Image (cartoon, rainbow, N blue to C red; front, top):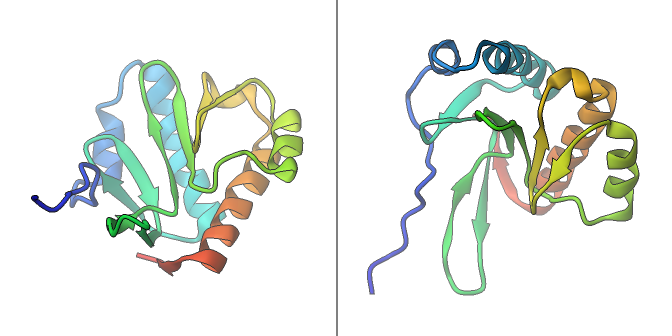
Length: 146
């Protein structure tokens, strides 16, 4: 059996160059704002993960099956349908649910927060969500700030 290889890995693409190509314009502008915002919130340098995700930091995971790899601590992608914010801890905890209740207009997936427009959410609450996610990851996984 061949070893599993993650599809989404860190690349050498420049995040600002990637953002310059994002359409529509409002999504590009939100993406540019998020790039600066994430750098401020995390204190980390942005790195591209795959062709369309801008990630910050890195952690190592290992499943009971033996599968292991590295992924970003947090990040975002300015997708056509919505801005996708990656919070690797997910949103199941009561504390996260309370914060989501104050965030503004959004949808969630397992570890994805979907926002149509950055102006739809309270960025202070978003900061709390992202910072909580990073803190949890640093407490529970081997992490790097690259």
